[in-house]
Image 1 (tube, helix red, strand yellow):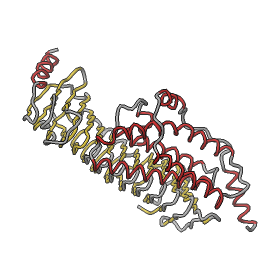
Image 2: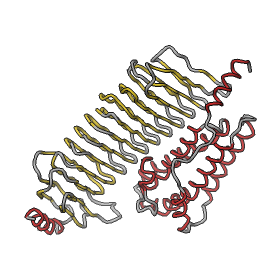
Image 3: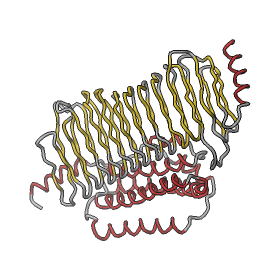
Length: 170
Length: 292
């Protein structure tokens, strides 16, 4: 790395945010979801989580740059994950309970797009491991979580959480 | 009061409607009121007209349980109620005329939705049906899961949202919001845009518009491409970025993107006095800034 690129890197790191606050408090909605007991996750969901975890670990081993301070961004991402995890679990459980009643073509569309979102989430996580201080990546992660919830709410209405909360996603 | 009595009487007659039955009913309503429409399947066309009346003409769903057509205060409701399980018969086919200045909120499931000549604002949602809107304005919100959205000659703040459906729009809107998972969006605005936000997971986004002074544009995708075509005399600070793979392309100016050690590309430049901002980010897609 030459002096110019060092200076450029210094300039870029100087512009990074020192802390990142979530755009809204998600805990009331998390609490609302937790209040309704949900069945245990089925195997495919566990397998999916394991796949994402494998990508996550792989990225850590293969490509994570060393020495970049990432506490604030990592904390934000952990907060996002903790907030959305029960929401996703509850939404997917509700979807599975009602999926048989959907038109088959619509069901294929929904599941194709849920799979696209799963792949995107894995891709975003890999990118975040490479660039943990990237605030915009954190926002993309949040919007992608919101889109997943919005898809399920669109086809399985009467959600216990007000869909207006993440209506912007759909 | 007289209008309300007429409405209630008409409701009584409407509720007795039978499945698959032809319907032709009219209510006097407020010109600037809200018209709420709910239907599961078929085809619903909502057309604005110059009368202070809502008229519903067509045939109800073959499996309709009830037809609700009522007005109370400033709100008029048109609702076709059906059982949960609809695997037989034909859906509703209705043409609904409403006062041109009404605000229309239409929620359908697998029905086509056509919205025409409505100046009081439209909020149209489908699950699997297409939405076509023309000559609509004030405030526009069109959302669907798998249907396509087409807007022509729309004006006012506009919001599009789909999961897999494509979006094609020719708007006259200064505020535009686009959200899709895997759909493709092609949006043009003849108005100078002040606010534009767009987000996609894997779908491609293409927007062409002149930017107003102080305009703010934010866009992001995971793997989809973004192409933004703007006026060369725009006054904005531009930040284009891809974080892993993908690429940044600039055909608006001679500035070239920088490529980082991780393969990420970025382009920062200032157009005019930089009053506004353009921030476009993708994880692995391509981002392009082009002349309008």
